[in-house]
Length: 123
Image 1: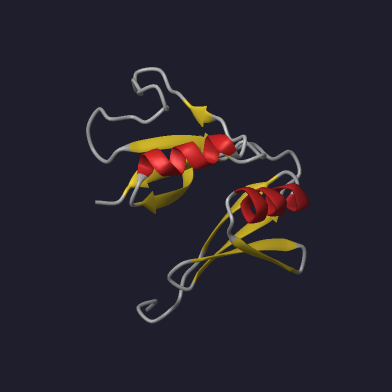
Image 2: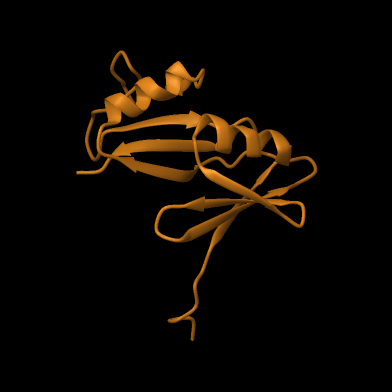
């Protein structure tokens, strides 16, 4: 039924202009404004919408993952831009905040709305 349908994802934010600035300027993504929604245009011809929500509550899970070739460089780049790397109990991380305890190397951070994002080693 949906085999040939180009699906897309979305998540809520509490302040669309602030989210647009973070994703566009801090993360360097192409972002457009369409009917009051922010649209992230990411590699692979994929779009993700960010929509305003009153009483926004951040998701309790990772909403967006960024695979990278060099996780140390990505984490260093994020922290140089003022992004705080998150640390979670039971997920021991190294001095940069990278979890190396099994599975892909990964580091988590949050957008201004509190949604959890990650960078993970793509190899």
